[in-house]
Image (cartoon, rainbow, N blue to C red; front, side):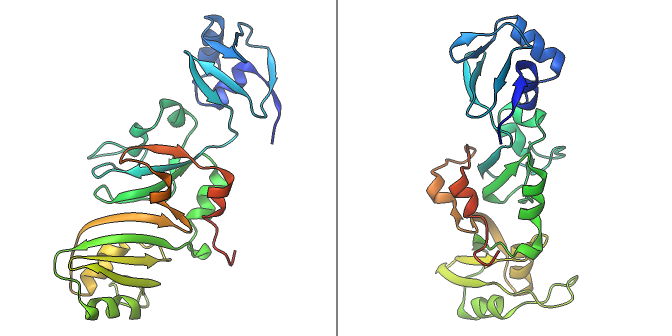
Length: 241
């Protein structure tokens, strides 16, 4: 959806700071639109496909941002991290200003695909257990993976604070100490707790896909991020939705 906004409002909406600071950036000649310096903060522009630059860095106006991050270990999915750096420190500062948040959480030692956005409706929809969005993980186990372990995870294991057993959608052995597991419920520490309940221990965990969006297709090194386009966002919606 496009609209016509003054340049200071555009910069503020994109996370460049307060209106006062954005007006100063414009007055200082640090903002260009279509290759031309714009010094009047009241100048208005259609936001549809609007390209502008701040400090010579190019930006495209986005009403909301939808981001995929290849999360490294030892980063917290919190806006106020306590023991490790927050994942937002891996993103441009503008995203913090525009209230970008992780969609759900990965433990500090869990790596892989993490979504972030400033679209509250999107965050709520993606986080809702009612949507049954499958998430694929690769778990490294302390003890060898056995057919009995796979069978237990597929049939369901009882966690102490859950009313009924939780089962994997799919689960298969990758090698002696690695398995691939797909879950829909999204419970707290679910993979680790299910493995513990089945008599093993998770020594490393990586999320490799959410819905039909696979981390490998994004070609992100650990710590790198990218915007998601509409086709990629549609991969996050279960076929039955």
